[in-house]
Every structure is written in C-alpha cells, then in structure tokens.
Image 1 (tube, each protein chain N blue to C red):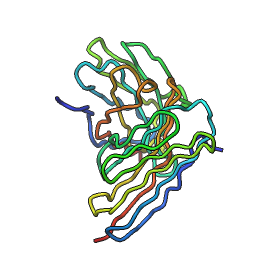
Image 2: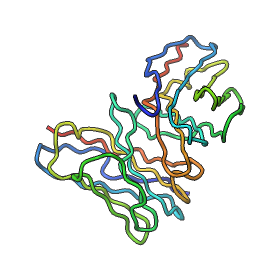
Image 3: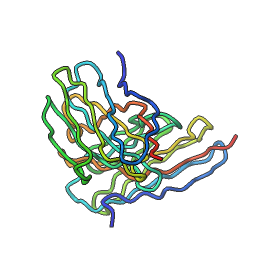
Image 4: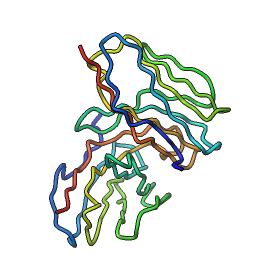
Length: 115
Length: 109
C-alpha cells in the first residue's frame, strides 16, 4: 500500500511570493490534515479536509488556505509569504478523520524556506 | 499556557538505559492519547495509542496515562541507538488533535 506522498519535498521562495503544496493520501483515506512544524512551536494544526469539505481549522491567518479534490488529493496554498512561514509542512491522512482514532499517517513533508 | 506541554530536551542516554518521556495537558476532554516517533527528515509515525487512563505495553515500549493528573508518559526499556529520534505526544478529544513540541532523544552506543 503506497504511503502519503507530498510534493515538492524542498522549495525556496522569497517574501511576498505564494506557494502551493500537494498531498496524495493513502488510497481509501478520506481525511487529509495539514500541519506546520517548526523547532520552536512543534506541530501546529492548519486544517483538516474530509470528503472535499474543510472540517476543522487551526489558528492561522487567512493567507493559509487549502482544498481537497474528489480523489482525496489535497493542496495547501500560502500567499504573501513571510520569513516566519519557513517550516516543514506535513500532510497526514486517515480513514475517518484526525479526531477519531488518532492514527494519522504522515508524509515526509515539504520543507519551505522563505528568503 | 499551551494545551500540551512537552519538554523538548534534548535527552541523551547510553545504550541500554531506561528512557522516560512525559507530557502534561490542560484539556480534560482529551480521551485518546498517542505517541509518535519522528526520525530525521521523515514524517512522524504512530508508536503507541491508548484510550483513557491506564497502561499499555508493546515490546520495549510502555505508555501510561493518568487522566486525573493530566499526565502521560512513554517508557523505553533497554534503549537502542535505533531509538534515536524525536518523540511527540499527541492527544485527541474526538474532534481536535493536539501535539506536544516533541522531545529529541539520542541513544549513544
């Protein structure tokens, strides 16, 4: 069974630009959650999508957005990038949602550097 | 105060030592408690999962949950260099999931 795939793995952007990250969940999983990981803050929840609907949202500004397609693949977008957006962005898939059993399957992440 | 507090370490122990990792939390609604392990340049992977209070053992790993004290622990017996990783506690109230900041563990041969 293929795992969670995130692309791109690494990217460098400059302040003010925008970026789109992609996540393909495990086949059959309907929930995709996005997290931001930084050394100081740990794993911070961005949002969760379930069957193309945003089910939950963390405490991030509106510059962070996402969507989920009918095949469960998900994208997240960050507009007007700031230096503080430099982080590892992790996508996690689960069968029924992050709040149910707690078993999330993570991808290897997209490491974003903002210069 | 953060919802989930976890000492970030780093923690360095000799091979064979018993390791104790801990988290405290403030939300009494949490009822699912997890430990994830994250190797360098990898995503976290689920290590242990417990529901409500009590102990759970899996090989060299034991997870403990004390809901009355809002305190969870992960014990690693006979630690190995391959256990070197960041360990994240996580907890859920059936709707939201919250992670600790992670404790970086190094087991030296």
